[in-house]
Length: 269
Length: 270
Image (cartoon, rainbow over all chains, first blue to last red; front, side, top):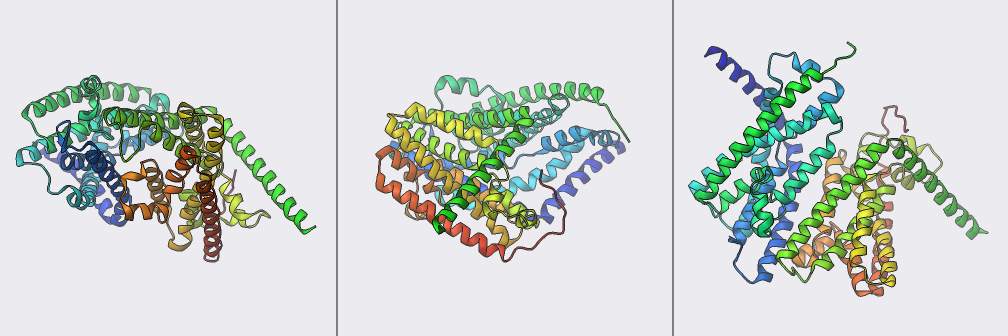
């Protein structure tokens, strides 16, 4: 029990160190967040124009207000996500991973704890920056306590899923060295099949039926949809799919990590 | 005689820039895999956005007066002109801001060349080639005749000149605000994203901003109207905007250069 407590404290200290880093460079963090305002402003204008031109208050079950709140959450989740895959890839390419592996912590556990210290304040900051804009154009959020709690659970699992997927991409540097294209392909799949540019509800039904089963939407669309248009059915489906894809990616990551460590060759001193 | 000397100078400058572009391209091709990855990566990036617009117009026939073909024309012009600008004049925006903030202009200052063109043409952004190819290919899907194709090529060249002026201007911010790399990069991103949406979705005040503070209208809406309507008067307006943008940028660059502080770092340009 003492060992477990010490372990939790060790990883928590990593999280809090990076959390402090983010606060120390708050101005830089805020300036990076400026871009979300531009994107959200353009989406507000675009979707307001769409609803006006359609002459209806609802499109595919979503009102304009729900659509704008949806975009706030998906953009915050995508822009604010951890970029630890870049660090992992850099450590693999430079060989510094060899030093990290002999330290008294689990390598992936370290990245999880450290990136949490960056991701949590970044998500809060981005949400805080986008909130006044969306409040101004969309009014109060179309949400209830149940939908907010459901979305929060889905967001937590989405962050975990993102961590697993991007860790796999980062560790792919053991095989392909340059992982930039892999990262970009995954991001672009999230853009279209994850509902980042267009809520999945607006897709043709054949594409919706495919996209809803894939992992891309579980990190963006699913939590945002639960926030603005909650249903127990969708909540159940989201949790089931998140659990399924988390298991699949955790197994894949475990296998990949084991094989990668075996392939590690250390040269020089 | 004076005119001839001016002409010789322009020819010399163009010949120098051609050599610079050749050297940059040769350096890029030395890492062939990286070259292909960057070009294909950008093509893929643009294809994803194209998919978005296809799905969007599949669901909504029209938005703010734009139909699918109007959007494809706008997208093709923005992509091709941005690509043309960055593939040759790649040392702009955040990269220029970095050079200024780090005091790394010394290398260029001691050489007997036109400073601003030497700096910006010293780096090629290979992914710009992906944008250029994508823009050209997309335009061919909506092209109607040869005369329109000629207009497209002309406006892409003018818009590329506007892009370069705007991105040099963003880089110049570092002369006045120090570390402006982040701001310049975000400014570039904001201009790209603002240019690739129909201008009709924006209100009056925002439209004014798109013609002034974030002048995305001159690389998106205006050139698209020139091609779509064969509006020669608007073409002249675009050319005038490009000339004004460059005069303003060169003046700002010259003013900024007076505030430039040399760095003590020794650096080698390869």
